[in-house]
Length: 141
Ligand code: TYD
Image 1 (tube, helix red, strand yellow):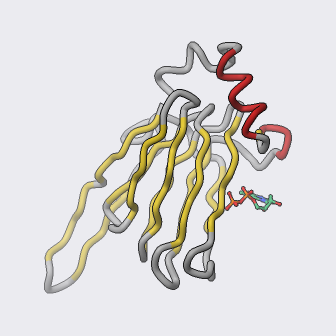
Image 2 (cartoon, protein in one colour; image 1 turned 90 degrees about the vertical axis):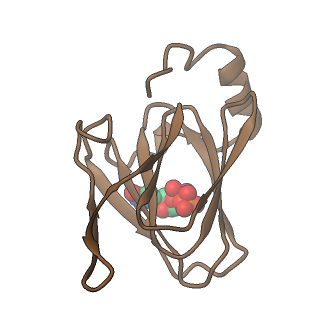
Image 3 (tube, helix red, strand yellow; image 1 turned 90 degrees about the horizontal axis):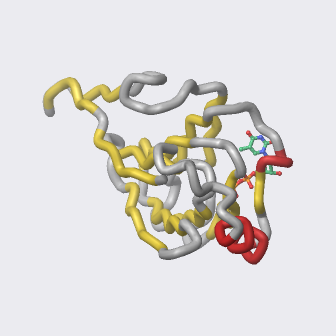
């Protein structure tokens, strides 16, 4: 499952804006970890994996990052170019991120602690798991 969401924006042009999200309120999981990626040269591709169980929310507080999501049946592209946009990326979604603008920052709120064994980094293995129905009951997240 994946979904683009728009955060509430509080403020006005003269003083700036504030956005927020909360576990189990506007994002459908408990946050256990926050991480962020920065100083990434323009043109770089990162990601290149899916997760067995991890659910994540991606947002770009500054810059322009193109995210390609793939559920094993089709691909969809999302441009994160505004601090009020968030992209929910559920378990079982292959994701690639492309840095479009210098100094873009990608922030991620994740549903669990870092665990390398939760990663699927081989695309053929990912497709095999999709075919086997590994995430077949994961329509919600
Ligand atoms: P990775 O998730 O592959 O980054 P990206 O999707 O941006 O390409 O992680 C890069 C490296 O950082 C990898 O060696 C795992 C490590 N890492 C941690 O140690 N803790 C974390 O919370 C994350 C997200 C990654």
